[in-house]
Length: 307
Image 1 (cartoon, helix red, strand yellow):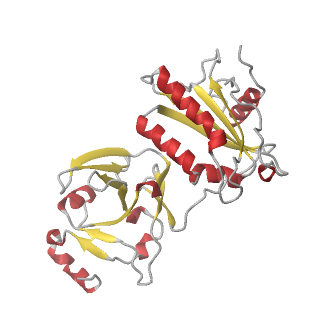
Image 2 (tube, rainbow, N blue to C red):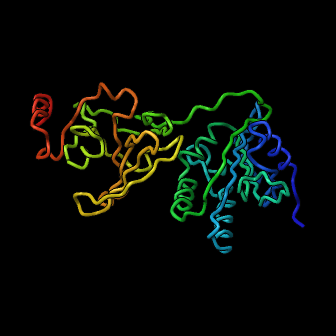
Image 3 (tube, helix red, strand yellow):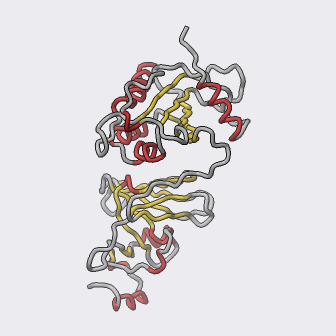
């Protein structure tokens, strides 16, 4: 019988403190319970470890072989995730995982749990936002549709009253939200060039007017990975764009604010609606597209836009 480690009790305690009804007990089968020669530079400093707890509800359609492959890939992150700028060595202190085997009916459909330990918030942030191995692993999981739902919490050992950590952000990151606030997101926009240009564009196409109910929309093209949804889940409406290819339009199903859209004609890019971003009221405009669809009275804009 696989050994059940005391980390299960820790997980039960943490979850009960956060919200007693959210999940049942998770007994974690330890695939690796050693520090695996963690380099001295990554040893836990005074103040306790930072523990990242992930609970998954896997798709009912997933095959056993696919689950095994995914599980093995996840566990391999312990040694594959390196921190080249510092030591080039593994920086994760430990990684344990296992299947839910609780007889109580409080698991909310979650089937497996993963417990990851890091020496510092900096290491955890690097894992979540920069580590190329982890980011590629997460991308594949999303593309394969393996996970139907998840619960993620982070704790710092010995801290029962502690505010949330600051979300790490790239330069140019801006906060955004829909009208009702149910969808919150961040977007990384290019910093202004020496000319002041950032790629902020008005679109006068009829589709944008119909979607927004306004004379035009304000947009910026950014890399797909530079938009992160931090709260809520936008709904999707698909239509055929001017290119003849599909366009996925993501919006809040409650207040109908249009957040961004993704065109099959521009793989790896998305177009974010900039007026949903903080401080966007004062932004200048660098150009416009579909000028032939511009309403006549919008001609006054020519004084401030390039020809």
